[in-house]
Each structure stands twice: as C-alpha cells, then as structure tokens.
Length: 182
Image (cartoon, rainbow, N blue to C red; front, side, top):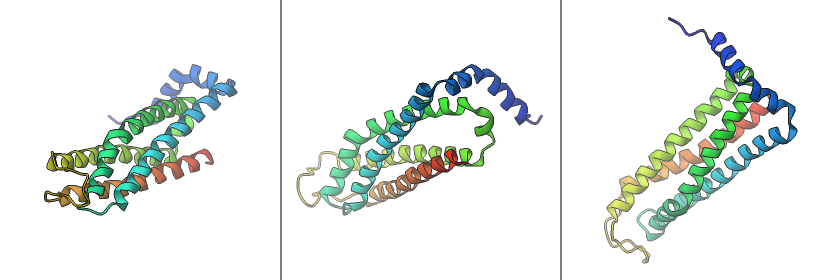
C-alpha cells in the first residue's frame, strides 16, 4: 500500500489550520516565532562554532587540546542542546504555519537533512569527547604536555566532528536563507 502524500499533506494542513490562521493574522506572533527560531540557531550555532574553532586550533597531544574538550563539555553542550530544542519547537511552529508549501519544498527537506546530520554529529562528538576524558582520567591538564599517552584516535574523532559541525551549521543557515526566498 503506497502512502498518498497529497492526502497526508491535506490532512495535516487541515489539522494545523487554526494555528496557520492565527500565525498569518498576527504580525506579533509570526515575528516572535521567526525571531525565536533565528536567535536559537544563532546562539546554539555561535557556541558550537566557537567550540569547534577551539578544538580545531588546539594541537593534539597537548593540555590545550584537552582543555578545549573539557570547556566544551562543561559549558557549550548544554547551551547548544537548549538552543536546538528551541530551534525545533519554533521550526515546528513555522512548518505548521504553511504545511502545504514546506512539505513539498526540496530546499526544506535539504535543510531538515542538514539539521538531522548536525544533531547526529553532535551525539558523535559527545561520545568522542567522553572517550578522550575517560582515557585521560585523572591526568593533570595544567601542564603544557600531557603526562600520559594522548588518545590520538579519539582526538581524531573530535576533530573530524568539529569540521562536520562547522559545515553543518553553515549548510543549515544557508538552506534556511534559501528557503525564505524560494
């Protein structure tokens, strides 16, 4: 049995029509939702890009590299995760404002794919960071060089995740801009 996409889109559109009407009739509401979406992406993306930059700039095998990861785990992830949550909530509100248009937009689905890849990469990065911290458990990180063998393989995972994160944030941003103009 094949899924009747047009019927599904019509059903979902009908279900969210009260929201779509409210959204289109209120400049304050529509501006607030768009602002929340952009600010959440700006905040989460900004924090993530700064952390990615610190990771990519630090030399493997040094205390600076480990400090970059520890700082990322300690501050960045909670802000990024909350920001992504707000981005998802406001994104669902934006989608519900015009299901018929977004559901058939290739740019919309490309943005969703980029966003999903970004989130999966974040999970991958957290696992790699935990692996580095676990391997260095108890090692002092206040010296210039690490007193224990540096976990190069785990660090490679963190660095590659940081590169993918940068690409993912920019792809999501660019596709969002294209989506608003298509």
